[in-house]
Image (cartoon, rainbow, N blue to C red):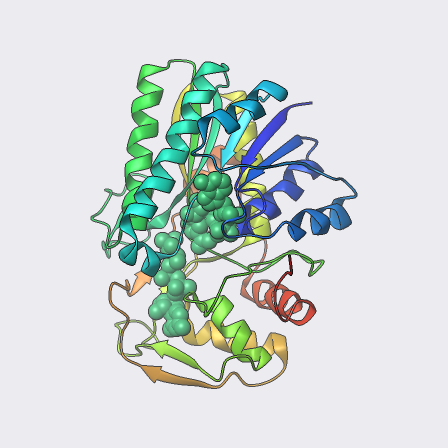
Amino acid sequence: MQTVLVTGGTGFIGSHTVISLHESGYEVVIVDNLINSKKEVLNRLERITGKRFKFYNIDCCDRDSLKTVFEQNKIDSVIHFAGLKAVGESVQMPLEYYSNNINSMITVLSLMREYNVNNLVFSSSATVYGQSEDVPFTEESPLGVCTNPYGWTKWMLEQIIKDCANAIPSLKVVLLRYFNPVGAHESGLIGEDPKGIPNNLFPYISKVAAGTLEKLTIHGDDYDTPDGTCLRDYIHVCDLAQGHVKALQYIDNNYAGVNIFNLGTGKGTSVKEAVAAFEKACGHEIPHVIGPRRAGDLPVCYASTAKAEQLLGFKASRDINDMCSSCWNWQVNNPDGLQD
Ligand code: NAD
Ligand code: UFG
């Protein structure tokens, strides 16, 4: 049985991926410093899977502590989710973002080299395509100019990883560029649990639907799109999780080097369509107003999914209604998120 080290494994995408890995027969070791997640996630994962996962409360930038994980476990592969991800916060706190996101990956890579661990899956983002409007984005689309430090950390980390793969011929890497992960596990036991007032659309709509926030502001309805609001490629987090299993299988069956895949559905959904789908899921209207455009927003962003379909055998199976109903189920069951 292969053992996968999942950094950031108590976070939103990491926790859902742990379930998919477990269901696919992998042994999982989780490292997370809980800067943006709760330990309660481990109890929830145990309720869902029946398994108590091995957990280390460690900062991935702390080499000495992280070394003990490699010392104590025979790690075959690493999935590196650990990182800070709030776009607006990254503009306010660039040093924290560069320091955390770059140093954690470098520390993981250096320990992988020391312990001869050769398989890596890295969480990248569609943000690396920058402000291009040439959709759909294929993996060959040029990397763009990012609009915030968070985006630049992904851009830089992709380069750092490529340089390492050039230098270490045995390294096998899959870079996954996620589009807009949303939704929650069908159990309603884990989901997205942001601190404070959410910035992203789905967590915000959920809070409005629940009555915690008064109304949604749609950031602009004068874009050159069918209903004037921006289009995004929302992908259910459980589909995304399955994409990581496919990535590990791909690594097993292929030569060393770096391979890049988009993970999306290939379909653009507008903000107004997302609101309508959520209204259907929760059974009542979502109060909303139209506000000005949000700085830096692309009118249209969606993935070409051809490469992931052909080479990974990955195709998302859940639609926007599944995303909204699972998100709502999580919200209803955990109105205040998870408690520590
Ligand atoms: P998340 O914040 O829920 O999960 C990240 C986890 O990493 C958290 O549990 C946090 O506590 C942990 N962490 C952060 N820094 C750490 C460190 N130095 N050491 C140990 N643990 C640390 O975020 P998520 O949405 O699950 O995202 C996971 C990854 O996917 C991130 O790298 C993120 O940038 C990337 N990504 C997310 C999205 C998205 O929209 N959610 C889109 C594209 C890419
Ligand atoms: N939106 C609103 N009102 C809100 C929040 C969002 O109208 O209160 C709109 C945005 O203007 C945008 C759409 O909903 O048109 C989606 O916005 P999100 O903030 O949910 O997502 P983004 O596409 O802006 O960004 C997300 C992640 C980034 C990542 C990017 C591409 O937050 O980290 O997807 O993967 F880089």
